[in-house]
Image (tube, rainbow, N blue to C red):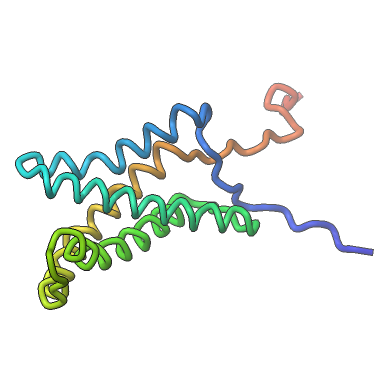
Length: 157
């Protein structure tokens, strides 16, 4: 005979309904706002959008894997953590990818020199983007109502 199931204290996060509206809006705001910081330089603006899209692809992939394994996030900080880790990895890889794409020859020294700068810029942007995404796209389900309704309780009778 199996023991009774353990009650769930914190419900898992759910996608805000309708998800077809809120998820793309959250992604557009979370990925697009850093482009406003670099309005004067279109090359850096495109690079920020590419790095943001790469970071969110990794974050949504890891969130999807954790959801598929039955470990759905129960707090928004877990979602932000996934985004920050993916943003850190994308920021670390960005100088090497762009040096390979835009230079005739790979310059490892320049890429290594730019790595701390991309982390310095990328981590706060990833944190803010993760917070924006988690608050717009996800919601905490309401607690189930108790069996005893407030209208049914009549004290002092």
